[in-house]
Image (cartoon, rainbow, N blue to C red; front, side):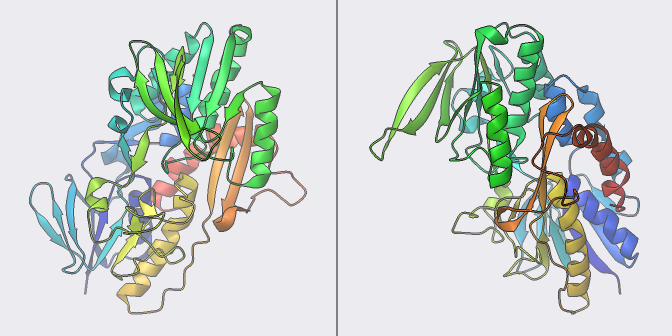
Length: 403
């Protein structure tokens, strides 16, 4: 008997799972719900913003990457009824499923920071978290003539948590190359209490910012932008246990917008309702099965997992676990595949320099390098992997279910 599998999302996670399922068995009817006509390799957007690759290198038609053998439904998920094992689409169509894979990606809430929507892409305000805005970020960086360059850290869980720093390092290098660094201040204002969650990599990054005279301020949260005056408003500790608000003028402001799970997930029964993962898909951290709805599996950016491993590298390790456990669930067998929380953040610190941060749950290092090699060191070979190797692995390996 053919089982019906519905996959919500045609991004990295959804297509990787679909391709892997097809390689395991043809005894499934697989439907992928995805309205977009284009598919993006988003890890390239940092390099687009840094002037290293053109934005066009990050995009291909969805029809070219959709696995052959799946039913592509060009629609948008709107409501999930996990008790009835049904999903309702924006068009009004309702689908029933034997197993549901939730891989809808992350929602960028551009309007959550007052002033961001109207200022984005002009007056020095930029962000790499969008296909067109990534290119405009490079325009902003390369035409910067000096002054106050502020880069804010993430106030919410975001995809690729290292991206706010990567673009800052590339921008600072560009300022030096173009002779404007000596009349510029480069500042990193982050809501966090550390520069990176894994101690060994944080220590390496602190050496980078110190050597390049980058001012790092912790517990600083961007709360508003006034584009007409080119002023940004932040909150910070006031020294008495409370917070205070201050305003600072900028000549360049790179913004990390707020992000969340898509609305239809946040308001659905599959979302976690309490704790630090509230609003994200409730997910067993090891089997990637929903704890309350055993027919539902989740992976990728919307999955509620400890530490928020929202990277392509994490998906590459999550996908085989979802596929193996989903097939076991359909057969009524125990779920034996386990995800250990692996994620990787290729921290570009300049053209030809990269720290390849790899870690699992509890921020424990899990390096692909041999033990005698320092994984917390800036490396040229790691940069080549990011620039050339990983895109090939993505297009030709992951999306085809081969890697």
